[in-house]
Image 1 (cartoon, rainbow, N blue to C red):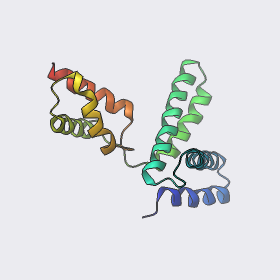
Image 2: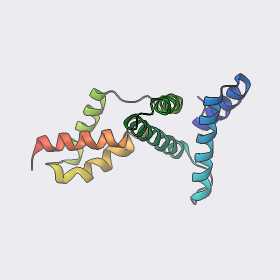
Image 3: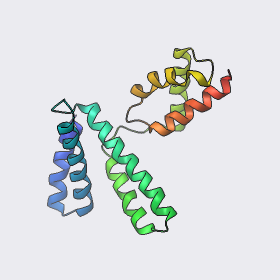
Length: 153
């Protein structure tokens, strides 16, 4: 199975051939963001997890923009961002369903021996690396808070 970097390179060429301007633009932005991260950091080449982190950040930025554009009455710009989100998501692992997310977090809460909201840090340390790229940090955090609140303490 090709790596994300290889898929981006191949899809960039395909987008150029098919003259798909939006896809071409998004892939170029992704490659640029990855390159920037490589130059910025001490490690010269990002591994798969590093690339997924960059793409997840791009996804979050697009979702935030969609909220802002929708609130500002700019449906045209929000629609463009939604198309970009769809393209970026194609390079990320399959997102967890709400039930899968709840089950994974329940497992992490048990592993951490969490007794209440004050144990959130311990649970997040376990669950965040495990679910990297499969769920947004905001969703993970909200679910952890909800499950720990039920425990009380």
